[in-house]
Length: 262
Ligand code: 5RP
Image 1 (cartoon, helix red, strand yellow):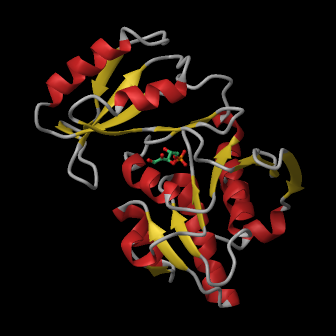
Image 2: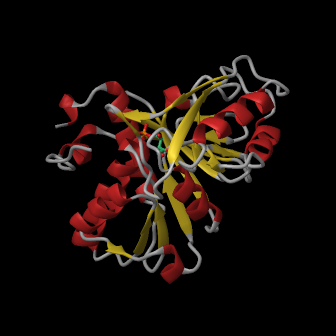
């Protein structure tokens, strides 16, 4: 099956596989959303079945909850778990300080709550997600449906005062209708091209009435597992300042996830 994976999917796969090794018996684990996080959930399910791994998983979306149940992970709500040992999630962009843009899958509200309620957040990503400065990926901002056009106008006014290269925004669509998040909200994707000050941007956006949460994760992520198309994996720990390298070989991967598609 590995031979069928594109380099980018191989990269996501090996990052997820490596991160799954960080999960230990008895942990309460935040389960991210997206194609990379789906590989992780599948691998954890396999560990539950094969090794008897005992964990409680807190999903960050209905999609992830469904997959987690399908693969045999015990699913609990964040309120039931209370606090988490570890959250593992994907990202749309990460920079050298492990600040992130998330929300490409429309789940950044729950993802941010879950990651913030965890001792540790680990991001799993293919190497193409690394950037010098955040902002090439459109920044998702979750807004309530009431008066969303006014909220957009207010956001664009704020953006005029910020260190960015673009100020256009677009309502995310799902076919002909606006995309609706798990919380019943809409998403505005901000085409900023470059975010000069991510910390300031994250704070300022959340002050706009109608904004529920933006997709900037500043000082939340502790480690990133970067996957490469040739099977290499790099584990970077921002607090310890360490980098570990690993190589995943074909054999183990070939037996996994053979019927999986996100
Ligand atoms: C969902 C997210 C995802 O983690 C992000 O979009 C990355 O997705 P993928 O792993 O499919 O590239 O933030 O809200």
